[in-house]
Length: 618
Image (cartoon, rainbow, N blue to C red; front, top):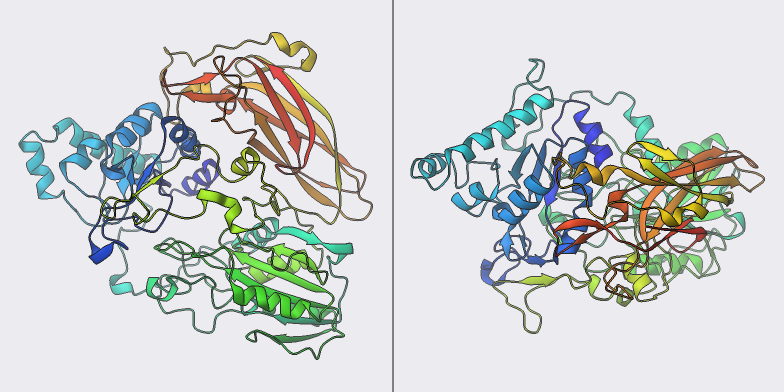
């Protein structure tokens, strides 16, 4: 989130980090939604004190980067609506994390007037809600202190000035009436090239049998599946690509190539390059031929002589509803039907999240699989760059792909309030897993995934060597001392209580304590490539415990993109470990604590493919 904030605010736009906090499901996320007869409170996400603090890390990054605004959501957190939750807004956000900007409500998320004002909300959207004249009255009768009102105004104006919007060059404030789009304004610059690169960099190769990819000047390709082309009528709702809630609700797939998720946060692109369009341009250069069938569930077998069959499927997700499944039968059957006769079946999945692949991943004729995510408007060009080897894939899975849905356990399904012992009017979801989400859950319960967090293949191979751990002897100073002498390393157990808090948290949390480095070599003999090197840390149990079941076995603490490296060339990956990286939230002391004991270090290509390991003692 920090890099995004820097990019947005670097252009003079106030970045808004959201949703604060614990907006973990769409079902019952706001008052009345999905409730019987439209009556019932929003879901309450109930999370323990330590898990909450360690969950808030991305917001710490956003604030440290200077985010001017934070948006509170619709849900309840630990039984209180977040936009009137003083513990979260005044306590965690503004006091512990030193937030100096303003808190804005999500659209119509305000559930009270005085309570939200006193809890730390600073701006209500999109109308005056429970404020307006009522806020003036509350100040006059003493329900809301005048100082609180001044604080609201100060925070809003400070963010406006911080973003440079007071320099007189910005357009007037306003919105288009009645859903009518304003006249186009060209702000694209070289965005097309950038989006194309980002789309390719984020594509993850999860299967590649005997070098199926990259394609080498194929002369005959078959293209199948609904995801290969642009939807014929994508403009049902002019401000949402793919239509509004009435169109999208409950869909498991999108009728057309999927470039973005749905909901109010998505936008209409100026154009879309579909996979089929990009493939058409490329095969024309090679003087080849395409055949296609975008709609059949069981396409004709008349093209047995094709060089390869490309099957395009997707998994859609939108605001306002949770996904009903992590796969769909139509798409799985489509892949299997084509693989039954095409010996080189290449599957491309555009997905808004986890998409299970077990029904067909082990089929001998499915020889390559690309998880292409949500690549944006240059989708087809990004994909063709990967398929033809113009770009060597370096993307990594940002989640675990299980073998079956039940492997996710209680992480899988949202609470509804209708479970045994549940309350339909006050639905709750108790996050009993604590910090054990995704790969941490699989590690703790020793579940073997189909593809682990951080997994991704390349057209080349990489070897790792020369792990080093250095220790910092003073803030900003790193002593090049390697592991044997680290046993005596000591740091203060808690951050200095006399140091003032800055935006993002206690300054001591950001100090580098250790530096970890290793060498990475392109051990292949044909392709240049980039490796995504990942650093995982194992934090020791507390002094009082022999085993700490609350702390994950290992946690990602950094990743570095090394390269491009030519065959035989090597490079260095270096990671800084801060006090925050090595600390846990002490619920008794209400502080970040650096535990005493042996810390474990792993460096590798995924959360399970760990090539190097080491330890140090604090």
